[in-house]
Image (cartoon, rainbow, N blue to C red; front, side, top):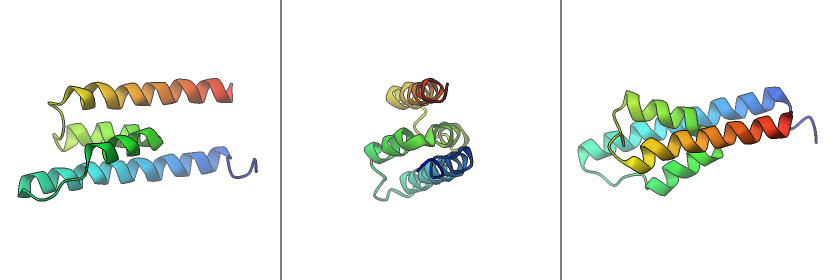
Length: 92
């Protein structure tokens, strides 16, 4: 069981979830511009909660998406900070 939660596997997981979150922000922005059905905000927050905070924050500012919504401006970084603190507490 310890092999599943190795540092290498955790890093790989975090890279993948952040890429997925970044892509979700890009896709949602593109859909917004075209007036198509959007990715629910709940889904974007779920991706961030699953570890995609860095990808979500990068996506917000690179694609200029959700940058006027307080819950995203505050929520994404807050979730990321809490996850970092929890990670430090668990691994130290």
